[in-house]
Every structure is written in structure tokens, then in C-alpha cells.
Image (cartoon, rainbow, N blue to C red; front, side, top):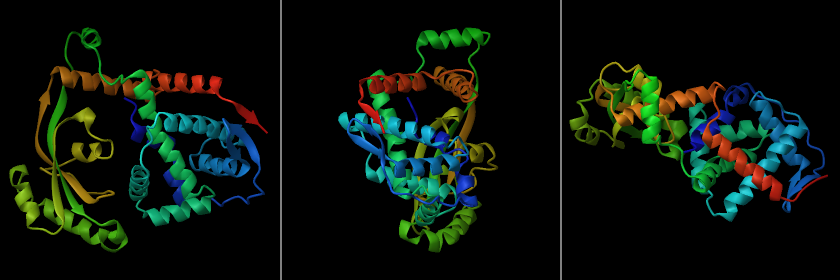
Amino acid sequence: MIDAKKAITKFLAGAALALLTGFAAPALAASEVKAVVNGTAITSGDVVKRQAFLRLQRTKADAKTAQEQLVDEALKRQEVARVRMSVSQQDVDASFARFSSGNKLSPEQMSQILDRAGVGVDHFKSFIAVQMSWPRVVNARYGSTSRLSNYDLVSRMMQNNKQKPVTTEYMLQQIIFVVPQAKRGAITGKRKGEAEASRSKFPGCDQAKVFAATMRDVSVRDLGRLLAPEIPPDWKPLVEQAKGNTTGTRVTDKGVEYLAICSQRQVSDDQAAEMVFRQEDLDKSKAGKDASPENENSKKYLDELRKKAQIAYR
């Protein structure tokens, strides 16, 4: 399955640093229509904002590249609307809040930076909405390729000297020191201190909920069994570097969190083998050694939309 979060992360690689170092917004001339995609206009103002966004990503930012990206996004957005598979505005806002938090900023501060850079929060959120919605449409059209067939699994093991790969199985709990959105700037530091202090007193997963009840606005979520390749990228380093039964803390959109490691062991079953092989495939894809089926399907779908579309350049 195409992972929307990874898709957004890929497009935003390097953007955070650029946002924090700052870009001056270019002066905007009177907006004029540069392209029309099935009746939807793309203006010169849109192109200028996308060029500013591309500069934040430290990538090619000429007008033609920006315009073609916007044409592709218009086609995707129209198809998402046609099949009624758009994410909600709440989902987009939550993703924006997570991105802001990951860069140690409030959504309001991130909005100000985007405005100063000439991107604008609306343009950025529109981009996020497409990146989150489009994978749903592609997966619905072509089906998920997230699982390996038994034949593929056996074939990969044969290439691995008939041995199933070994990985680490974790049983995890998520401990959340809740921080309301309206109070993030005021109490996040205090809550982080409370979360850090609680780690040394953590009694173990069996008593976690009783332990949480002794503190204010602390919740416990059972994550169950997770294999090492399944752990989200934001948490993986903290899990791997954990000393004792808790990880370090992270500020997230919910508040301040850490993970409790209830148990861990080395496993070598079919599910573990599949996860390891899929991670290897993902690593190859990131290194440019292999084209993922998901990306191929996305390109095929978009090419079809382009062939059927009425696109007029001005």
C-alpha cells in the first residue's frame, strides 16, 4: 500500500531546514491564468507559490517545473473528488500540526513562516491533501501490493540460503502526557519534564494504566506486537536506542509521549520474513535501485488522466 505519510515526508525532505533559515517572499505581480485543466484554472500566482515551495525543498524551482506539478495535482485532485476518496480537512490539519510539531513550532508559527517564504499555508495544506488522498485512489484502482505471495516469500528465502531472516519483535505501549492544542506553547515544556521524570518510575506494562491514573491527563495505549520494520520512522531510533523499559520522549500532535517496551525477542516466522523483505525492497527503492509497484501504478494512473484531460496552456 502506498504510505501517504512517507509520500509527504519524501516531498518535504530538506524543507524544514529551509523554512527555519527563511526565504524572502518574491513580489507578486498581477495574477493571470497560465493553464486550464478540465476547466480548473492555474494562475501565475499559483505558479509563484509552487516555485517558492520547491525552493524550500532545495530542488529545481523554474516556472515550467512548478506549473507541471500543479497540472498533475489538479488532475489528481479532480480524480480524488470524482471517486469521493478525499481525506477530511481535519486529517489535513492534523498532518500540518504534526509537521509543525516535528520542527518544534506551533501551527501558527509554521503558518507565519510559510507566508513569509511566499508559499502560504493554504497552498501547503492543499499539497498535503493531495498527497494524503491520492494513494487511496491508486490503491483502490490497482489493489494493494503490500503483501508478498507465498511464492514470492519462498523465492526470497531460497535466495537467502533457505533461511528466514530474523528480526526483533516488540510488545509496546504508548504513554501520552496530553497537551491541549490551545495550551501547547504554555505547558509543553512542563509536560515534557513530567514525562521524563515518570520514565524512571515506570512500573512495567502490567501496571501502566494504574500508574497513569496517579498523574493528570496521562493516557496509555496498547500497541501490541510490532516487528522492527513496522515501527514508525519517528519512533524507530528511540526504540533501538532505549535503555531499560522506556524510550526517550517525543513532542507530538497529542502531547508528549514515550513508548514502554513490555518485551522484546528475536523472531523468524513468515510475517517477520515478509516484513524484512519488504523493508529491503523499500530501501532499494529509496536508493534508486528498484522502482516500487506503487510508484509505477501512480505514474500509470496519472498518465491515463493526462491523456483524457483537456489541458490548455496560456
